[in-house]
Image 1 (cartoon, helix red, strand yellow):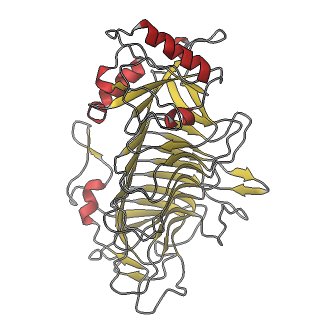
Image 2: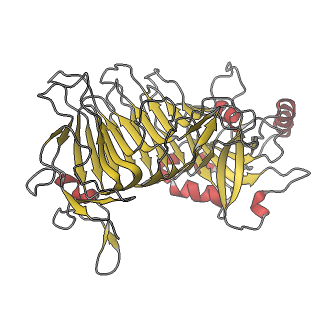
Length: 485
């Protein structure tokens, strides 16, 4: 449960009768306190009471965490409306999902580490800092993120903002993108600096995913978050199988996040979740990028990516260290032994020769998996540069089945040298990190190390390849490394 609290603007003079009317409303509805400038809200005919907002540039008297975020995201918040929230330790007011429901489209929602003082509690900002102190915002149902809304954690030093399911949470996802199939909604949304905890106070686990989106027409930016992935499917699940026209521009940037997987007992099944599950088999994504994230813990896969013909995806400088060794344990939905890779790349199955396979660009990743490092299915193109694969098997390519014809390939090698600049940074003579811009500086060779006594070679698991994999004049480069004794 939370309370919303705007600090009074130092220069703002509020007529007494308006102030009294406001507090009367707050007592009647048990909704968050709002002390703000004249509101910019949606229509008064809305089925719920809209929240007043404050011009972000005019916010004063804020906590250090809020001030830091406003400074950090100056260009993002410039000229926009803000709402600052404070956590309610009593659990007496509406939860975060209801508060955000009453916020207008395009609002920047800042989650502060301050709490509303009550008779039995004080602000967490006054507590001594030992490590990071969680400031929890509870939700009974999924947050519906409207067109252009941003959620930004704004904790003071020593605190972290946590969105956590309450004991009564029964929704499928903690955060959902609003207005799916309403393609006139095109404003970007950000989710930044938040810890997501899908396990409730009584250890209830019921969420299917933490963030979910279907068919939408805007860009979602998810950066600098911590995901505790104790869910039934994936930390982030995107799904759109509808054949949409080229005017729809779905886009995703997932960067600098940490995902920690935990197996979940659901009924009688022990489920290993996936970190990312992106299934856009029906429509072409404008841009999708997974950059500099950390995936660890018990996960079936760090990422499963199913793209349609003509799409492309960048997967750069991620660290994957997952335990997906799960004999007789399969995540939902169960499909025979298909969920045990670091990254799983799926392409189109149509045998029409005029369809271009999706292109996956992998550069600078470190992938450690207790099973396979990279799984492949369908027709794809792959550019592989300066990755390190560490697993029992480097590859797992589903064998040809009903969609395959002898003259067709499953995997087509693509020249990786344009990706040399995306390799991991190296140190210059002064010790500073630099990102190479030339293939001469950053060799595009990939390395392979077998683990757990595996005797497989760098070719193990590949069944259908078009291109040269291990020749120096080929299009994919790998160096074989023996496992340390």
